[in-house]
Image (tube, rainbow, N blue to C red):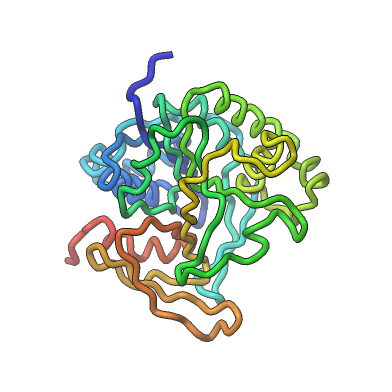
Length: 295
C-alpha cells in the first residue's frame, strides 16, 4: 500500500445534536500541527464534513486539515452523559464504535491517533515516532497531579489496569495489525467481554476495549508488549472542571474538588498536553485557542 506520508495524525469526528465534533477537530488539528508539525487527517461522515466547511472559513479548514476520509459506517446507539461543572449535564450520542478502523482509514505509514478533545500544547509526542509497535498512556492524572478515581484506573475494583485510547501511536508492523484485529474482535463481542471482565455501565468505551486487548496480547498476565510513552501520565481535565481562560501559552482552569464539590482550585498549565473532557468548556475557549481576536 502507498501511504500519503511517512507520519501523520488522525482523528475521528461525528457530530450529534448537542456537540459539534468537527468544530473541536479543527482546534485539535491546529494544536497538533502547530506543536508536532505533522499532517492531519480527519475521519468523519459526510454530514460532519459538510457542516465543518459550511460553518468555518475554507482557508482555515484547508490550513489545518490536510486530508479527509469520509466513512459510511452505521453508528451504534451509544448515549453518553456529559457534564459541564458538577451541576449541569446533558445526554448526547457518542459515536466511537468504529475507532479500531483507523488501521484501514489512516493514510499514513506511522499514525498518531488522537481524540478531538486532546489538546497538544507541546512537542512531547514527537519523541516517540521511532518507537516500534503500539504506544498508549497506561496511567493518568488530574490537573492537580492527583491519581484518577479507581473506575478510571481499573476496569472494575479487581479488574485489569486501564489503558487510554485517547492517544494511540502505531506503525504498520504485524504486532500493530494483531492489536487492531483483536480490538475489532473485542468491539464486535463487547457484551461478552463486559460479562467476562465484569466492567460496569452501558456506555461503549474504547478505553475498555484496548485495555482488554492489552491484557490478551500480554497473555492474560502483566507485561510490556505495549509502549506507554515513557511512563508519563495522561493529563485529564475532568468534565466537572472548567477551562476559564486561554492566554497565549497559559491555560487556566478551575479544578473541581471531588470530595467538596463547592470548592474549585485555580490551576494553570503551560506547554502541557491535556485531555479536555469538558466539551462545552472547550467550546467556550475555542476562539482563544485558535487565536481568533475579539471583535
